[in-house]
Image (cartoon, rainbow, N blue to C red):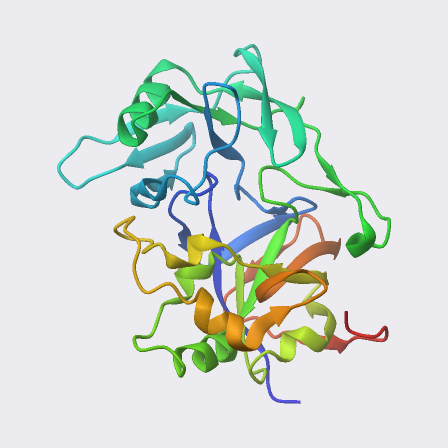
Length: 278
């Protein structure tokens, strides 16, 4: 097999806001440190994403010792948001079918997102009380902890698969459209479909299931505008009848190595599926 390497690392501190590119990232059982540990919710506590509010893509996020710094436009002042204290207000929030407790990030952050989105909105953060587990056929019955990600701790994408997609598109798209955590190189296009797990140093990640894609792939991650949606092209050759959706990338869980760090350039050892591909 060709030399397989980790070629980029990305965290999304606020669910559905802009990614941060990293050279090194610590990994835990819930995924990369800081990834999707904050979330924007509406007045009913229901999660908000670019699916309905693509303007979230315009929010650039920086991680600070105290919390986060947010920018929504070059001509506006940054907003510094402190991580909620242990006694900050708790509220029930919804992520898909899950209802969990989270801590409010305060009035200034709520005003920031309400103005940006044109609706009543609030920023919340995970706390010790935020207990969310994924347990289904794809995790083989193992309870997997997850924060505010859609369903799994990590998303792994293959650069060759993006190249193969771009060869079919009128204009090439960047990998940011698919919002991965890890991007690997050295595999054939869509070879990730046949992989059971990968080892990166002391870290083992299991590929749980292909990631079904939604309309967020059609949102430019810099402007927040809809443009060059690849879903119809993907549908022609990446429709999964079992999952009833178009797939790109692999959802992954952390089997071993929580507390270790991943670095761009790390070698990746691939283990193929012993079980039949779904």
